[in-house]
Image (cartoon, rainbow, N blue to C red; front, side):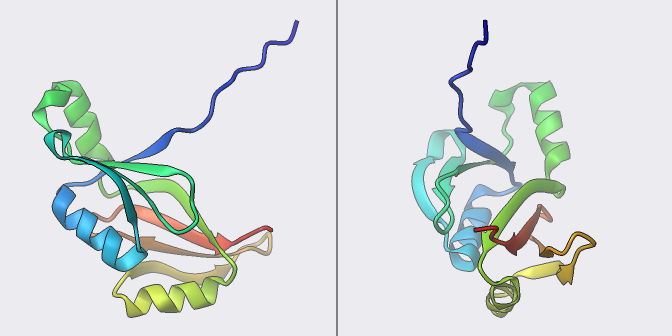
Length: 134
């Protein structure tokens, strides 16, 4: 008997060092729309563009417990695994560059024919942009 799981991605967790500075950066540079701000927990849910995926951005704090706090701090400044899709990588790259976004890889054609670019936020968290497959 095949059992189907009824699950979906609820959010992607992004750890930052300063929630206020990061929220300002994401709103100004990427046009993030705040869905909910949990000030007590130093956590924000927001959408970017047409994405229906919530990014749960949090600042590590002692209420997490020492082991979780340590793991969270180690994740800051690493690749997020998040890829934003766009219809035109070069145009999006240019717009983001004009907004002051720092790219660590300009638009580059991969061996499999996809064009991607990689940028970082103010904590060094890495994101990619690629052409939408639609």
